[in-house]
Image (cartoon, rainbow, N blue to C red):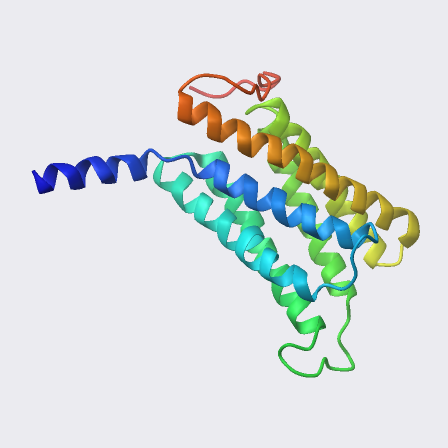
Length: 208
């Protein structure tokens, strides 16, 4: 009897949907971080806990669950962006002197180049996202805008304009992310579509 209960419990864990958790992590951290970019809050010290636990751990945890379910898209995308937020967390911690005095030769432009590198990766993710569902496609397009605008603004290219573009795109990522996370959770829980995510565009044929 005890062994049977254990097997049932393990089956429930394996069948859990990690994507809802990971997307919620992305939505929450972009929502909080956008408040700073939009001038509604100041500083980055209190962004660090949300970046660490929601942006980083929640997405990496969701990726781990998706790996076990053989959900290739969720595993790679959530894992990649989870690691991105680990790096951002470290960046903010260093910038705020948590690890000691910031060296005089510290160059913020390195973060700008990192954003541009992630932009390239995100473009590839977008090609796959539009063949998953429309909401994921929209989120990835907005992520592309955020990364490109943020990276260029940090490098000193139209900083005022592109900082504003980055702020609003980040807020929209949060809005669509909250919806996607809730939709995935409810649709999986009830076993039917309660909140639609939109059919894939079917522009690229998958191999058999």
